[in-house]
Length: 238
Image 1: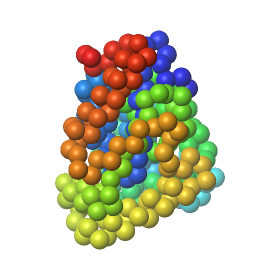
Image 2 (image 1 turned 45 degrees about the vertical axis):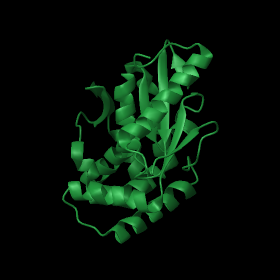
Image 3 (image 1 turned 90 degrees about the horizontal axis):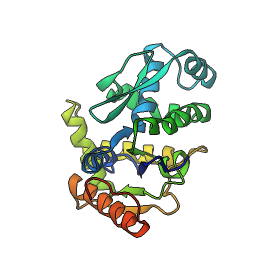
């Protein structure tokens, strides 16, 4: 669980849904010339597989039987780490509303999280990375000194998610989206295992009034200052 192994750095970016984790982490990874890892996509991929196989996500025994049956592997494509299940990369299918509706249930199963977390820790084999999710700084890589927590106002988050849905040709009012995010926040923060919370020592970045690149720049500059103080190796051409 070390944050720097053989010059491999892990930048942990946590936060609630629609706080900008994915877009900001991709931008920061590009600025740093690191790999990008979306851990939420992993739980979505498992949920997608369960739906494809007709597994009841509320039946933990059935879900775990599936988890022990499938083969999970990873590949690095254009500096993005992608998870494959039985050799298949599900792509945009994991953004289907059916998956979104059920992913919190899958993600709340302790045994599923244990398996996925072990896979996440193994990804240092690909090199330095920006990994985003909800428990990266608290559970997956708690020892990394590069921990960030993104947050934004409820209205801004609802607007962002509404735009994301519209980009996928899914129509929803901002009020409905806001309520959906409120429910998701409750599930993520209230689950018994690996609840969403600010990691000890994390830098909180409120990005309601910041662009994606501005938020990413805050993260990159903070990392560079940390490295200068520690005399660590440089990142992103710094």
